[in-house]
Amino acid sequence: MNEITPVRPRIMLENLLKNVEERTGYFGAYGGAFTPEILRTTLDELIVAFDDARRDPSFWEEFRAVMGSYSCRPTPVTHLKNLSDALGGPQIFLKREDLNQTGSHKINNVMGQGLLVARMGKKRVIAETGAGQHGVATATMAARLGLECTIYMGAVDVERQRPNVFWMERLGAKVVAVEDGSATLKDAINQCLRDWAFSMDDTHYVLGTACGPHPFPQIVAWFQQIIGQECREQMMAVTGRLPDRVYCCVGGGSNATGTFLGFLDDAEVELVGMEAGGEGLDTGRHAARLAGNGGTPGVAQGYKTYFLQDEEGQMRHTHSVAAGLDYIGVSPILACLRESGRVRFEAATDNEVLEGFQTLLQREGIIAALESAHAVAGVIREAPRMRRDQTVLATLSGRGDKDIFTIAEALDDPGWRRFLERKAGR
Image 1 (tube, rainbow, N blue to C red):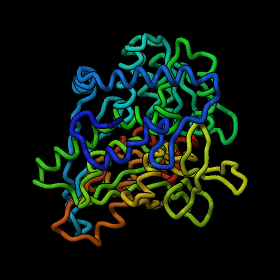
Image 2: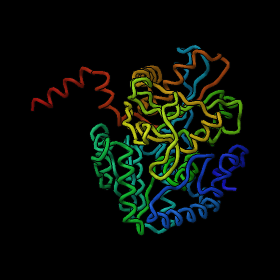
Image 3: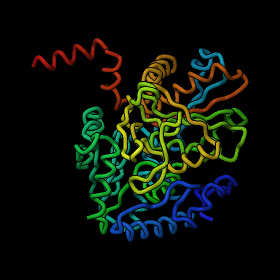
Image 4: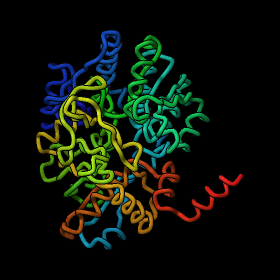
């Protein structure tokens, strides 16, 4: 049985993943490995290396030790008393992945894959990034482990995430702005796959989310499950019971998958994924694949899942105020969990996200990434309809320093306008 969790067998996890070995990486009807023949040998080698590593108890212990000494794990759960009182519903808790090294959950998967790279003896890593947090995490890992690093990023995202580009370059990574297509995350992934096809002998592709061809969804989920394991233990310690509801933002789905894996077998815990509603699901300017039947099943970028595509299978343009959520596809693990009914998917609009960002900042003093603010928006929308004796947990997947320019522009901040005017007058 090909389990994700190395800690305790859980029935739904086993059922979810029972076809991974039998059907080459499928989760229910989704997943697989639809790749050019040139990548097949490298993917097979990666499957063998990962299977060997995850069956070695010392590898997981090494991973936990590195995350404890280098990335502040376990990250805390924070009780949001002010927000709870303001909403008048359940007690709200926040899993603080923003307190990780590099400011997001991305470092979990990246350091894990870095240890795998060292085990395989490769010397170069490449990665795609949208919001830039995965790119910063990969560049950080490469600096720590002495690896050559190239990051592909859509040209649109390079402009709106300039702080993260700055840090990637200072860390020693080469950042390549991708001008193809919509010049966002999907195009960065395509360019990464092209690079890998010609450099696979000494290069590992550090895919940043639980998407792509097998074994990447399984690899990313395996490392990110550390979030859900900690959440479960911490909520039991703090409240004496499991939360009634858990919220996560969903782009590709790595933080949501990692969090939800801690609660899959607990039927009393409702799991809610919050996608990017953009300007509204009826406008066509959004990135909701699973909420509101926005996406349809298809095959692209090496795997089968729900994509935002037209009737002819051409990928549609996406929109979100959050650079990390405007991806055309979603994790095949989450697609499977949606069809099984285990996870409910909703969408938050850009306006709701900006309101959620400001509410959390002003009431709790916590600066959320715009991606993470989608989960906060979901809590703010639904918590008033819950009882006071209930508890809610949301994962804050990253901090919002990187979004300062986007937020200032969206809020039409007067100080920001004066800054732009002075800059233009030079």
